[in-house]
Amino acid sequence: MKKYKRFTVVGTVGLLIGGLVVYYWAANPATEISPVSPEAVADASIERGQYLYYAAGCQNCHTQPKGGKLLAGGRRLKTPFGEFVTPNITPDLEFGIGAWRDEDFIRALRYGVSPRGEHYFPVFPYTSYSAMSDRDMLDLKAYLFSLPAVARANQAHAVSPPFGWRFAVAFWKMLFFDPGPFQATSAQNAQWNRGAYLVRALGHCGECHTPRNVLGAMDNSRELSGTKNGPEGGKIPNLTPDRETGLGKWLGGDVVTVLEMGMLPDGDFVGSVMTEVVDNATSHLSDEDRKAIEVYLGSRPHIKSDWRDKK
Ligand code: HEC
Ligand code: HEC
Image (tube, rainbow, N blue to C red):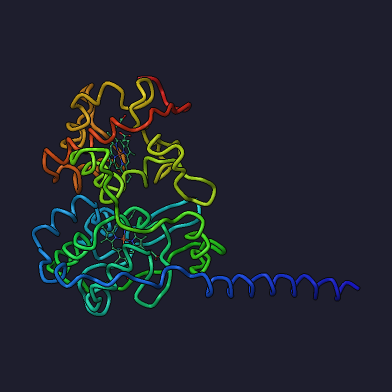
């Protein structure tokens, strides 16, 4: 009887996994890819790409702090699901992405799928980068490919099942991932739309500033309202216009100063991972772009955070 029971359990689990695999193959949405327009390829500009590289903060995760070679990977990212190690994205042919075609690069950023058809874990914020335009992705690739190649092998992530299963990411994507380029809204002006693109696509601000659900997806009903459990376990402030717990009166120009030099209105400086965001990303933006970010943040719904000290 006992044996029979065990058999039933094993059988049920087997069927379940089998069913999931079939479902995954049948419903995998990530393999289709939009064709790359020939104009975008012909015009790919290293100079534009450099600006986008800063705006998107690729360096922060893909370079090991304290002396790691630029973009050669190896930075460990702690998450509630385990520890991920970033890969080498230099143009090295063997260890980096030097052999990637334009389509491969677009597919990785737009759909979170590797050239071999495997799903990337969403700790790589393609959930935000997906909103970049094809043109911006290709300019970014042109810039990355102009940087030195580094022969440094990738390391395996230390993430236990089921969170370490790549195929499981397919289900996660079905539930939480809405790929596709940013669509400007005509109800808002160009400055607002630029700000929205910088915050949501390139700057991926929500990847830190939006609280996450138990499966690690951004809770967009509380978009940008901050969280107690950010990367590295730190508190992440509320970026909505709420007066008491959010940016409030800082939206009169102070946010631009934070993004430019990390200085807060009380003369203090931002700390933790935001220091890197300022140093390697927002301080390199143009004044117009920093202003556009502030304008966009100021237009967002006011959300109060219950854990934050009042200003
Ligand atoms: C928050 C940290 C983070 C940021 C920021 C980030 N990445 Fe990554 N990236 C990762 C992680 C982690 C992986 C590995 C994902 C996996 O193994 O599933 C990855 C994987 C990749 C890969 C796949 C490499 C391979 O060998 O398959 C590419 C390409 C890539 N990132 C490019 C970029 C670019 C370009 C940017 C900036 C626009 C960027 N990343 C910003 C964390 C990050
Ligand atoms: C890698 C995670 C991360 C990303 C990405 C990130 N931030 Fe932050 N941000 C933080 C953390 C952590 C703090 C708090 C720093 C501190 O404790 O001093 C912060 C603080 C801030 C502050 C100061 C707010 C306050 O009330 O003190 C502003 C403004 C801000 N971020 C804007 C942005 C914008 C705009 C973006 C996107 C361009 C962005 N951040 C992207 C982690 C991040």
